[in-house]
Image 1: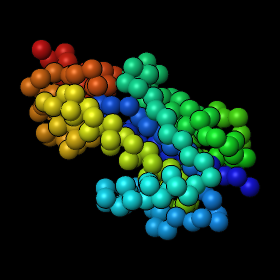
Image 2: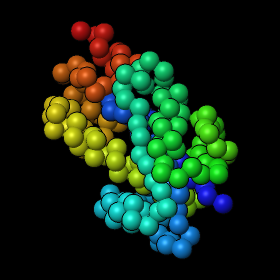
Image 3: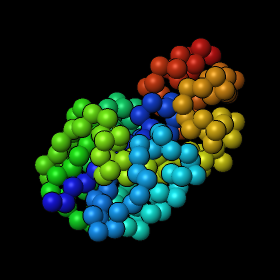
Image 4: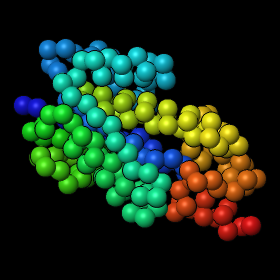
Length: 188
């Protein structure tokens, strides 16, 4: 049975897109060391991401941008990114295993698996691809908007990020619907 693991990266940050990945692993070409991306070093994630891309039957990465996050809300933007990732696969899976407690609408069967990125290799692989792609996008945002430190905190609400927001106000990469951004934006 062709199973796609699906996971996202970037639901909690104050800036940048939410990124989702879908991966169909090849049982004849296993990738050793798959784990939840949050449990891996950035260097190990990059190595594993390369192996996943080379050995998987199919993989795809998609996102929902800041405007979609602000108009839909982060949950529905995440579902949109996940659906886009599954639809972008070169092979339609029979079932998609989704990390979390709900599934996006898909053209195949789906199953929500809480903590799936720690339990299923397919979801762990998707977690790794989503995280490495999102991290690269935030490094690119850092080059575009260097005042905010996106390369270091990846858009999360760290004290440094909140201080930069208070000093400079939000940039176009910030999610205007997220409370810390709204509060700072209207404090001027």
